[in-house]
Image (cartoon, rainbow, N blue to C red; front, side, top):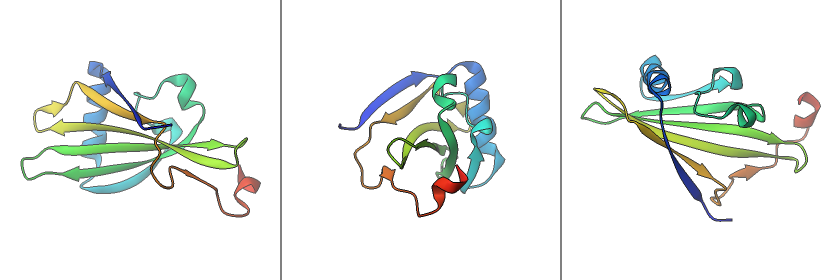
Length: 121
């Protein structure tokens, strides 16, 4: 299945949350458990997630690009899927919308975990 982007409108609460994430650290990345994921992930989907990699990158104009790449452990398929969400945060605040990229077909979107992984899940 091809990449399927879906644009969402952020609520004021979600915008504040995105701004908080973007101000936590400088450009770079960090891991977050599912309990600390952005509220843009619906509750039913969040329940299926394990954690996420948050990536922050700044521009010379002061805009921050935030990507939250959530990981869903799919025990039936013996695999881990990715669900990226991206949003921009300008010096005046978070944009009013963001983008999910569903059903991506990029290399290694779905990966098979190393031996022994399932012993800990």
